[in-house]
Length: 195
Image 1 (cartoon, rainbow, N blue to C red):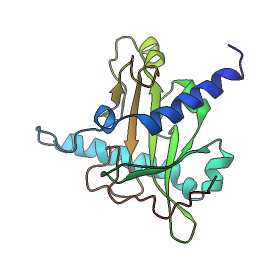
Image 2: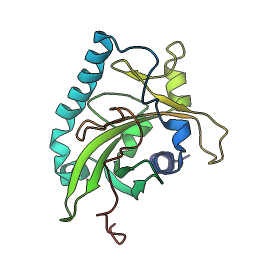
Image 3: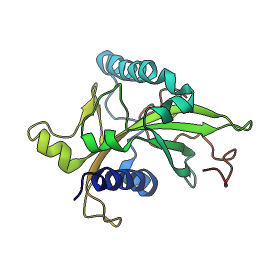
């Protein structure tokens, strides 16, 4: 595989992962049967804080574009679960296999009625084979105590297994900071003819 083809294929895989994965495969439980300890709460708040601090500059979508994030997929919505919104994906970050709370693989936006975009959160994505090869004894990835969701292969999409994690750092999600769908994000203002 040539050097230029690999990043393109990884970007295509990332786009497919974001758009086609079923909610049941990726959605994190909204409620846990285990009471949240103060330590767990502090970790949750710390991750959201780091994501907010490191992505504040992406409130202007042109800054994200200038840093290698590219619009993909249109506006992703669920049939009854709200939406994820618009994904700006950084293929090289997915291809790196590195998870860093300050460098998400995708930045999420929602379109506003005036045509502007509002940042709502981020998504971290890593291919399972890449992660498992580099972390054979670590188990599934986690970021500041938050476990990633696993989607196994083979699957009906023909994609390799992967891990992912949404962080709704810029728009509070009543269902939790790490679930896939946001009930208050909408695709209603997204023009069908946009990019």
